[in-house]
Image (cartoon, rainbow, N blue to C red; front, side, top):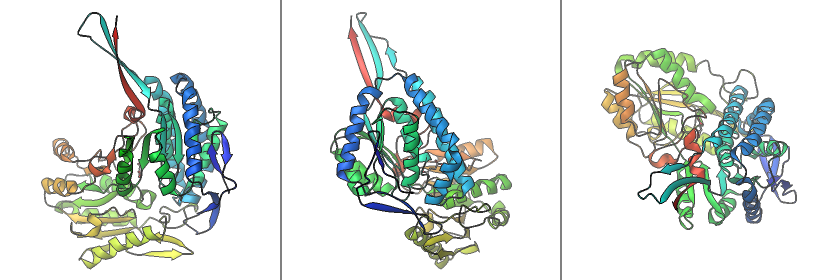
Length: 474
Ligand code: SIN
């Protein structure tokens, strides 16, 4: 499957060197995309800039009708998109189908939300003045998206940007550009005006530098590591570019002793093993109180033992491969470090390589301590470390003891007890008795070093809008 880049309504880059795309479950090359660079990025930015003139002048209803067409096309091509996601990213096919539905929900939501971009009228201090606040699109937006959700992280950024009247240059992850380019084909089929949506593939540093330095780009929206987010912030300083950053997480999963243990087990399994633990919001540290510690571990182990690891295109598989060798090495390093420092292995604890593909068994570690690597760094793999805690205060103190602040989870059946813990957590998202809180209509994003701004809900369109105050003298 060889695809080219999408720029100004044309498919470009057939003459460039190619980057191979491989299936992380088999090591097999499944396609290629052009190795675009500075000049293609400039071309895409110029196209988006030209298209902005017309797109920003369309009514919200007109923009919504294009987005609705795209939504229908994505839904009608769900099976095909899900198959492609499994092939280039590795997640099991039921999860890939879930991702397509999740991704489509952002297009549907923002098609409508664009119609509710309201300004304000402010009471004036003098009877000969009228004070207004207008909302206007920021301009050309650059979106840089990760490999772990090859469809949904695109639609979560691009749909609100387009609904707001912005035009977009997208740089998808090098590992998963094929889903992005298939979405571009659907954008073309939906009849969007040329230049409104463009995709550049290739070396991230070269493309990223042009996107950050080019003064035409007014806003950059990025999902990825905190390290790269910090680099983008430094680069953005030179022309004061607006930024939305969805960065790393290190989610605490707190289970208080008044929790419903069965519910908590279901919640951890969903949060921890979704996408083989390769999500920014997945449980990375599990804290449990003594009264339910052993009972929880026993039931959790029973559920984890049912999870099957393998190629996600097979029907019964729950856990696909890790994205590459360095991801595998990091996961194993965290496990070995914990074992060396005295953690006990409940299940799993090793992985295997198969023809260049890297799999890791779902792993539970108990009696973990907060000095261990795994309790301090994002693992991005199917490993559940469990630490015994004594009090609610200790849970909060350990949970907040990190530079990250994306997602946290609390399991407690007590209203005031749960409420006090939830309120004290420095996290942008808290799942209270809920292991899967992400939805299109709610804000997604982090505090502290986990990012800036929010995606999703009415909050997610604001970062693509400028606020203009207009004072009118009569
Ligand atoms: C992510 O891992 O960044 C996205 C997860 C989600 O949307 O739930």
